[in-house]
Amino acid sequence: MHMISVIIPCFNEEEALPVYYEAMTKVMEQMDMAEFELLFVDDGSTDRTLGILKSLNKRDERCRYLSFSRNFGKEAAIYAGLGNAKGDYVAIMDVDLQDPPSLLPKMYEILENEEYDSVATKRSTRTGEPKIRSFLSESFYKFINRISKTEIVNGARDYRLMKRKMVDAVLEMSEYNRFSKGIFQWVGFRTKWLEYENVERAAGETKWSMRKLFLYSLEGITGFSVAPLSLASIAGVLFCLISFLMIVVIVVRTLIWGDPVSGWPSLVCIIFMVGGIQLFCTGIVGQYLSKTYLETKHRPIFMLKDSSDDKDGGEL
Image (cartoon, rainbow, N blue to C red):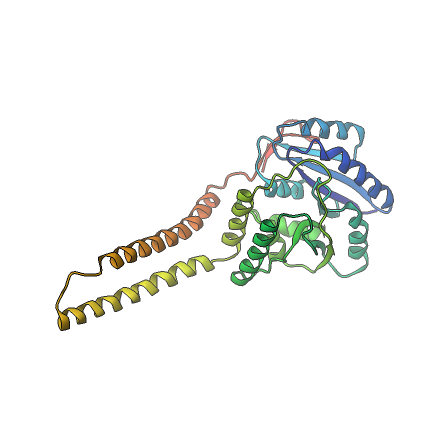
């Protein structure tokens, strides 16, 4: 009998955890052809999340937990879960039930009977989501797919079920700056996509602010494309050519008409424009340098404070 490990990242989810466990229990009872482990990853929660996870662990031996020493982010939680999962199949699922557990039986059936290594999900609609967020998300996917060789599927969720060989491949990608949607696509393997309509949160509040989403999008762009660096280089060459042409024009004009003092407002505007473009290009280079700097430090992706397996904690 195969084991399915379900990785559930949690950050201040005391309201959602009981609802999720009840829904997931029904699915596990339905899927009696497989064994389960629910691996909850507490990402440094400040509410009662860890206490609830400990209670679930005592009540149900299928529930395991990892607890970080602080908030390292969802990407670190996913990586920790993948590294500690024991199953032949591994799923990633949000605790807020925006990833419907009811899809899991169908995902498992596909991997068992068809030649796929992974079954992933994507939203077919964004019903209930603020229009500005939907617009920015759509724009991000269009932009990154234009500049990156790795296709990032529009509307893709982290919710997926993978075979062990794909999980091992993802774990080989031990980079500090992580963007899972890109990593899953970069490692390859045959993936079948299932669509479903957007589901509202079952309980609690979202932790993804516009600022966090913007920073996360930068991780994706800098992690899977060097096009911004090429843009900065092209801008530099272009302005060198424009400067050379302007020098020629000024010299010719001076030789023909003399050197009247004029054009100071336009000159100031040009200086500000060129200065702004230089700072913009410097910022692009700085983004890539900062990512490189963090990678070379070889810091752990996360630090464990507590777990259901090892009370002494650890690191990776």
